[in-house]
Image (cartoon, rainbow, N blue to C red):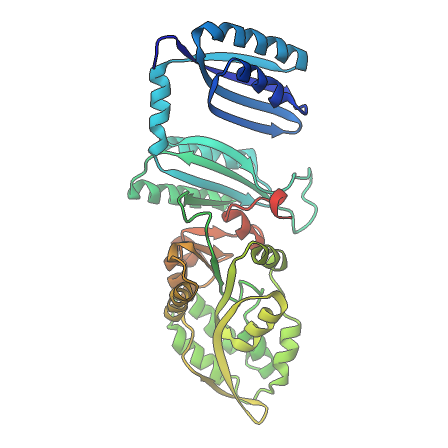
Length: 406
């Protein structure tokens, strides 16, 4: 850099006013200063503006004097910091390092949550570039079930695979304190997801449909016991599925319509689907449950694909058998891969969401796998999890901001 050039960082803070940024940058423009970096944030009508610029040393004094006068006129504080060429080059050199996104999500995000998360970030030598709130302005009191808060941190630095794994474990421990913590690499795929695949039972709906059918057939306790064991990963899914379906033999098919119309829909499904469709995502239900109920949700919320199990019916009653291949964990992962091929997208652009052990293959295959209100074994294995709020929490893991999507 030529000797007659100076690098100066100016920081402005105070009450936000229309035209403030224009007034200040007009001064830089008159002296043909080159802006090297600029950033602005607003918190509760308070402005924080930073500008890094380079100018001829003959002009630097006049620029700072005029900025000082203009700041006084506008009623804001201004601070100047000279930056050495060596320090600037070091800063530029850091831009090649990896970027990550850390998302804190819950009914509320407390100071202790942010303190614990940022401590982990610092311990691993990562630098926080930006912090922003993704949810709407937070009320003082959590008055309803739909209350939610989300803060996103953009961090930069280099991590080995072992260090990333350690950070994930540390964030998982923090998640036990009433906040979900997501840690993702901020690469080209992170903001270009195109397909989201959902488990149905205990994910899109707050029940296991086969348990509902079993209650109507008078075999509820037997089926629930088998279901719980399968979801914990203690027995093979195909075996458990066949045993449970056999217990439904003789049930009138009219029962399915009544159950479908009274399904307890998971919090956030309608909002999530409305926004996902608005921004162009393809959505699929990949379920170890039944196509009848998957198609009901498809018609109600606009899912693009449904793959589940078909119950065999004769003379208006269930036979206790099923038709076709069972949609188990292996099949879910296979269907996810096939849908990506059909939609002509990279697997890294896919998202999978589920709660049970049979969802782990697709959760681990997808670019973003999210364990939703999952069993302990599943949550411990999945890379990301949501346990504090409804399904629309997924929108924040995708980087969507309330003020832009509502």
